[in-house]
Amino acid sequence: MSRLARSDERGIALSSPLALVSAGVVLVAGAAFLFTGGDPAPADTARPVTATPSPTPTSTAPEPAVDKTKKTKKPQQQKPVIRRARTYVEVYNNSGISGLAGQVAGRAGAAGWQVVGSDNWYGTIPASTVYFPPRLEAQARLLGRDLGINRLRPAIAPMKFDRLTVILTG
Image 1: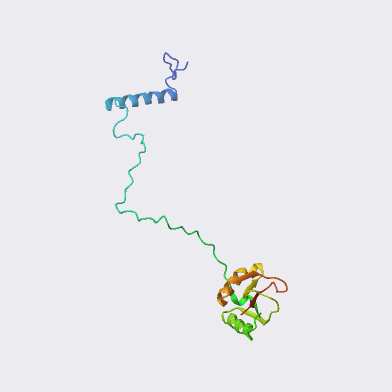
Image 2: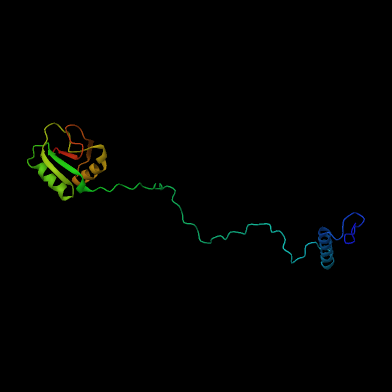
């Protein structure tokens, strides 16, 4: 064995870095024990913190009364924008009133609809009706409101399927 590396009775070389660090740790721990009076964790040393929920502040104001008899409204879907001027309309008279189709066509045009024709209709229609192709149903509802016509029906042949057809009965 060399002169620099002496061993103790357990065979640990006292000059090894591990032995020096171990000895230092023991000395510091012993000194801490003596200076703190044997208390392993001094009062000014951080200890683990256990989380406890803090009380939630309560409001002193009463909650507003809720009327449970009212139905809550569902969010409405956005309605498509209807541009009257882009929708073609034909108006037909199926009554004995002379000039009725022209008169109603004028009202529809004044409301902004693109009236492309008016004439007489031959056949039997039970009530004034707005006929519509499937893609123009929303426009038909609006035209019906504009003209005061409540009866709406899908378009049938020989009607054109790119426009609304109004048939008046009186």
